[in-house]
Image (cartoon, rainbow, N blue to C red):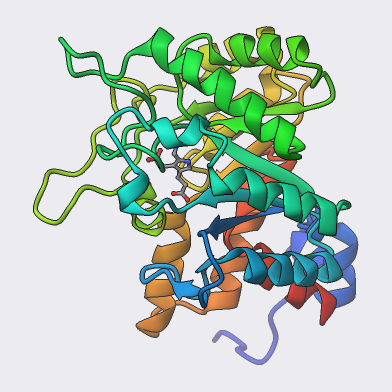
Length: 341
Ligand code: PBG
């Protein structure tokens, strides 16, 4: 008969559970940690002095007028978030097919950056370089009149001017997110020529044509109007199926002078983050995009996921894959929870 009261120990040399048996030892052997220093908080900015407006699909995220932006950035700095990425939400009446408002001196976004840099100089300002907030069609550049496709070289020409105006306003890091060919080199040349040799370029090097940008397009108002087909950017953004092409893009951006290479989205592209990290000595950033944020929140609201644990795990995975820097809408939340231990 089997004696069920006594189980002889298995003859095991390795018992990996010994390193997991309590919180103290788990902390000692933990390989990856997310710090506030790793994070960049994306923020949406609008003109005027109005109250912040909620962005429906992104709980906790608001479009901020300049005054509320200053307050928010002050709070972020107190929490240890020392870098922000700004996206303007432009009034529909100021948009046209060519996004002309972007490069006019009247563009209030430049004054907002200028004021922010003056008031809170220690916080690093990253600004997106693309025309989608300014165009009526929502594409990142101007359209070729015969093909209807985004015209590469003409768009690059406009973006170099926009990047220079952003630098002049006080932007520390310009972040081209348009995926036009040759834009990093053209922007670097123009910045240098105008005396902005100290302005950095964070290249959206491997940016995929993703469905996960939906909530962001809602936030900046670049989504198509109701009923119209969703915006297709697949003639310039990468095919989600392609890893090797992502590495080509990363190499080109590095060769043209990018200071930091970014992969976007993040959580669905951990293999790309890891491969880019292995192929460069530049710092690697990853953008946990609006749809990644929205889906965690949506599941948590339904009671199907624990919000904080799902959030922490999503960022840990991105860091573990090799990201040195993470743009995430959770940055402020994370900083708070790190502060509270
Ligand atoms: C636009 C831009 C997009 C995002 C950042 N810059 C959207 C797009 O390419 O349509 C997406 C960010 C997010 O979803 O959080 N150039």
